Image (cartoon, rainbow, N blue to C red):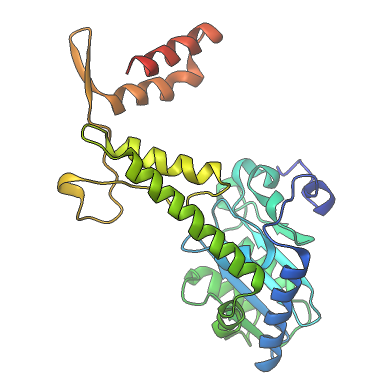
Length: 284
């Protein structure tokens, strides 16, 4: 378990933070100022599946899943704890995106770890601090909150520290937001260019995603283009509807593609088998 090294030297060859070191230092100083204003010796920031924005903002870490904590101490020291570890290997679970030196990984219950280990590691990282705040208190699971409260009796809500630090955008952040707007414009232009009678919604969505990826962006969530009876529903994802007939059996395009892609890793025959799968997709 966790055989690959994931300390900062091991992460450096792959680490490409989204902002400069100066920008991350500015963010840390804003958090420290907020902690000082509330008289805190340490701040524990919780992030879970509902949003990983704060940990990404502070450390560039882009968790794949699970629960994460960032512990910020009044001397500027920072520790990241996470149980979002697939296959029991942090380096295969996006930990390589974290620029913080001190990263502590919990195996989690799936791989035989204690259910609350990620919170226990966060409590340990507080050190000798006495006045400790918790940000992300609205979304933290009860069992993690109970573990932190048991280990840190003086824990108090401190959501405003992170909220206020993130409220005023820097020049670099504004530039990133403006570039995001330009990419969104390009994606919508691709949508309108692709719209035509007989073109499926999935093909139009693919045009939007392609425009974003070519410009260096990623989807914040799955792109959907919807018409017909589903058009009034948010976040609805229509399947490809065009049907083909093969060997007397009518199947939707989506079903055929699912068979092809879903079975490809298990096909025998190497390139020949992969070629058959590719030909099926092209025939559609």
